[in-house]
Image 1 (cartoon, one colour):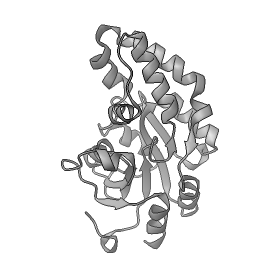
Image 2 (image 1 turned 90 degrees about the vertical axis):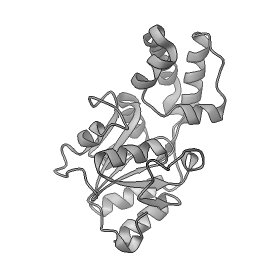
Image 3 (image 1 turned 120 degrees about the vertical axis):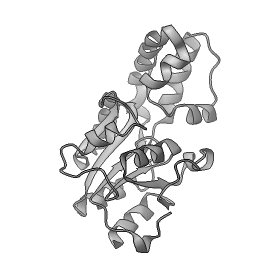
Length: 221
């Protein structure tokens, strides 16, 4: 793991969305359990939802629902569209982090496995759209996270190439895997994923306790 003394100031920061900048697990849990019930499956607990909902829907639903995955997808989307703006909330320090990084003149983007349209609606609802050069969600690139394709798309209009000068900030092993696949610096924000995931195959380059610690670190560089 890199020490702060060895770090160079990043040119860009790309963020995961859920559990990194926002909390919207209430709508996700309701949507997945409504879908499971409609498909004849038992519901998942809150902890199961947080562990199992990592990959994008187009990557996970065919394995979960087989030939009925398109039907399940429609139920999931119908449910989540009905309430996701009512339940989305910024995580502590997220507003200050984004405002502070924008003041520093850094390029910001999002790479999420939440469907792109939902992601951009939530960002607009929170008043955050102007912070980001590109918000890339599931289905926007040819492949989804952890593939590096959405990272390239998030940077495509910035003039910045993926590399160690781009910090990929997330809370799960899948985020760290995506960062490494793209050649970016993998930055772990301690949270739900940090206590559950096995990071041995994709360890972070840098770990921070929360969003305000990340802002303070960048400002020191």
